[in-house]
Amino acid sequence: MSIDLSVQGQDRPELQKAIEELVEAGFLGIQLRVNDEQGEWVGSAGARELGRSAQPLTDGHFRIGSSTKSFVATSVLLLVAEGRIGLDAPADDYLPEFGLDRRITVRMLLQHTSGIFNHTGELYEDGTIVLGVPWQGKEWVDNRFRTYPAEELVRLSLSKPVRFAPGAGWSYANTNYVLARLVVEKVTGRSFAEELQRLVLGPLGMTGTVAPGASPELPEPHNHGYYRYEDAGQERTVDVTRQNPSWVGAGGDMISTTRDLHTYFSALMGGRLLPAELLAEMRTPEATVGYGLGVFAQETEGGTVFHHHGATMGSAALMYSSADGGRTLTAGLTWVDDADLSIAPAFGSAQQRFLDEVFCGRLGR
Image (cartoon, rainbow, N blue to C red; front, top):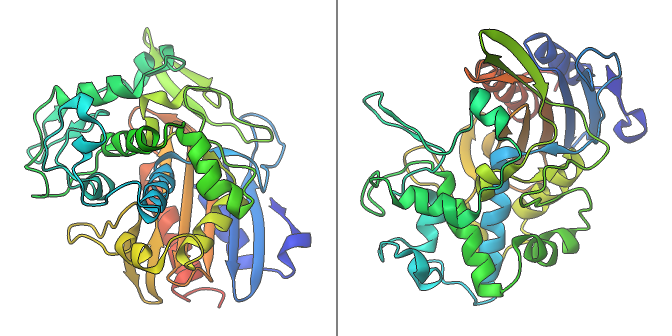
């Protein structure tokens, strides 16, 4: 285990116990940062690499998966504040090359109410699975350095039947955010990475966050993530720390640290990034699962908690905040992934455990 006493300032044994128990549940390594009225606590548990004893970093870089969506939504809303994007304008106004349904607005992209098919595949209510780009098993492993242009992902989605008429339902689709990022790039004439630096990273002094595009590199230092798969009847495990994330694109390709995620989410929820009216729009949830514009709203015993977690092959992020940004929890997790997503129950348990520990006052308070 590892506890950063220089940052921590006090002992929080309940937090250390929680991450050690989660490692026992199947995670390879966990790095956790909690900021609340008791101060800042940083710790880790598990291992930095499979088969080695080195402890995981407490502020290493990791792939944050769908937590990326919050950064994309914030960037769009900041451009709304600049008058360059209309939140309720048709997305087709900005991206006429795709021939999008004119009823699909920018807001619908950010809230997953566009009805567009998810380019990473769909699971329908009757159990039918319709595949999109490969992201499981040997096929993904063999192609994990392939580049998927954003336009290719969008056109794949548009070649499939829509889930529902625009605005008539809710369905989580990575393609919504691929389109939202393309809107950012179209209206600014700059890459998303450049706009993210101008709008968010620079103003907040965030130095560990990357929008990598098609680059497979993960900045040092970092923990390692793995993938287990079957090849010709044999089980193989491969280090997938390096991988090209363009298959998911703006739905989940970014890299960050627990420190940067805390800096970002506390500033966002504390009203230091967006104008008050746009933060209110972001935090207003739709009725199905409580999704706002790039954030989930969850009612707990300790009040409303906002979050957007994310997972990709061998790596995941947790990002929680109280409504005022005064209490945050950010974590990076690594493990040996597989096509059956067998870590999913443990990931769900991790979310609930941390929610109980830090936001609901049940343990160690």
